[in-house]
Length: 543
Image 1 (tube, helix red, strand yellow):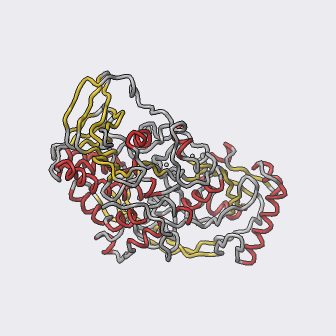
Image 2: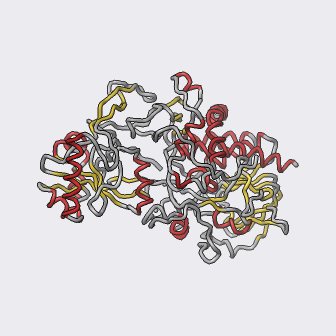
């Protein structure tokens, strides 16, 4: 199936929902969960790098090792992440002889446990009935994503998400059910995370999938780095050059599946392809951007929306305020967002405004209720500041005193009136939190709680919590080769490149966009398109 990028507007009709799994409930709020995924904003949602701009491939020995060995192969897969292993298994089950290349000496590390899915048997038992169209609408809340998001491919992934879960169970992955993401008490529907028994992604997914692949006869070559895709005069892919130690090997092949990850380990590519996520340092040394570096070699169309998988945290563990009970201000001392939005929504809005840091403000009453237990280290380190007056607080925050005073006065007036005309944050909202008396490990019972969201800064001392864009613990980038739903790579003229497939972070720019909409999305895409790309690559090899 050849799915082209759709320029239709996002599907309307649902509000922003969240899917992030995690743990921890505060007195009134929910503690932030570790997730996965950096420079000033760009107005261009999609970037096509010119030859002069293209960062150099950082692969060791990419241009110095002579090819001294030639290997004939049917299907070659680059990478042992979830998409690569899924594709390898699918290709092997479709009758192909499969070789998997991995530059590391073992399985790569992944940060993954829960998968966004709808329509699974687990969810049906609980009465959850979100539709594929609703999930696609959730993934496309921002109108400026129209030009590069492939809503047809997203719908394909949503429609086949339950199928992916059953496939994983059949292939040795221990799926225990569904969980509720505690990082947003307002999620509708409540249960959309299908969760593995082990929260370690290597143990949960990679090890059982590798075992299944080996059972099917898949060959693994570790410490073997792909350095160049080889094409013939017609532009068809015919091979891949690799380096292992001092040995260069040319794999002559019938189908190549690129599942080499993203570009989080390349500072040059982060600057070029992730302008929406300011000041990002490298956060994944394993992924050097093979797909993007090879795009010119094969004339592949590149979809690079400009972001990464990132969010905002207090670096010293201070309260993250996912419900949005405080007042958030930027470096100018002004509110910039509806604080009640899902925290990844706030990150996406921050990217568009060029915000790398903001402050969450509380008076002493609210701070003691929701944040006091998290702030000792941060207060000592200075990433939470405290003052008896707003003027003094502004100075400690290093923001304009007059601007912050005006912002607080306006906000306090909104709190008194019970209405926020600037950003529409509700005064109160009912939300769900985990029942503290429930002792189950998964699918904890929920209880309703009323959250007061318009809280005035009325009682001294006042607190400001510094929130900065987090990159060091994140694991993903968005941007790579454009593909159709069979994983076939599309060239710059809109045609399929013969024998070439790409999945996972090597081909997610048209599926995810400039910011990460929720945890579990990437796994949903990886398992769906990994399965279909593997089967298509095997059929291509057989023909």
